[in-house]
Length: 325
Image (cartoon, rainbow, N blue to C red; front, side, top):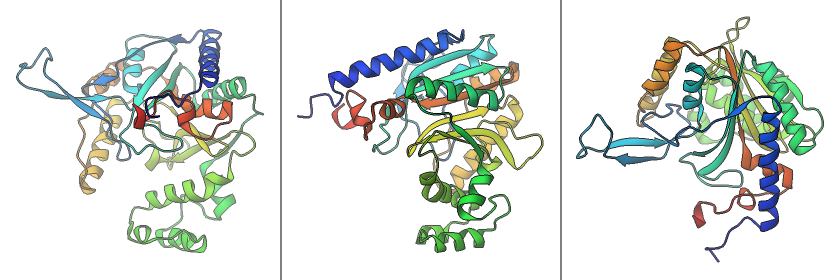
């Protein structure tokens, strides 16, 4: 019956306990809970992310006869960094996030995201704190840490920072993963991402959470470039039992560099015949004002609860998935 919840009463109680544990974890560390808007006048430019949008007629600086686009947040990141630039200390948020993507085993278009920012932390310190949270909630053993480059060399025998496109295609052929669209793909970064997700990911984090760091700078997103190796970004992800759970950065604070990255995203969108996205001017203004050195991380709460309850579909840990919403 489609009107009924897919979240059992037993699992609902367990979910509530986990949310209480998360809040207590941050309370013990004097990290303050905040709330930011779900709707924004700006959105992400990332080629691989699409926001849901709506129309609004009543902005203060426009006629109520003219509607403008507002975007549901794909993450509370921009708003939270604006809080940091306003003078806030260390903060966290348990927020609803929205992404225009197909629903599946690990994803619902509306989902719950835990995001937090630590002033003065680098990405290694933040990885250690994420590890403590995972051990608290999941009771798992100590997570491991490994670089993106080390994983490629170990599992597929190529260095991702020097491999050529023909070498990557040969690797895919050897692994029986080559398909027509990959042959036609001229962006080596896309090939690397495919190799990582299809061949490497299934081999890591099966017994303990695995933190992967030093991603290629082409996948930097909002992270700083590493000072001692400009091929890599100070970014990490965490994988556990087949689930991509965490994405974190030593945050880029330079407004000019961030604007250039957004512009590059839109250029790539144009080349792929995708709609360009408006750059979030309020976020850039906050960076111009000054974002303190910090590291931040986003963690999928629904996926975390899936792991904690040992269930195999996100529908079992949320009340009403999109098909029943």
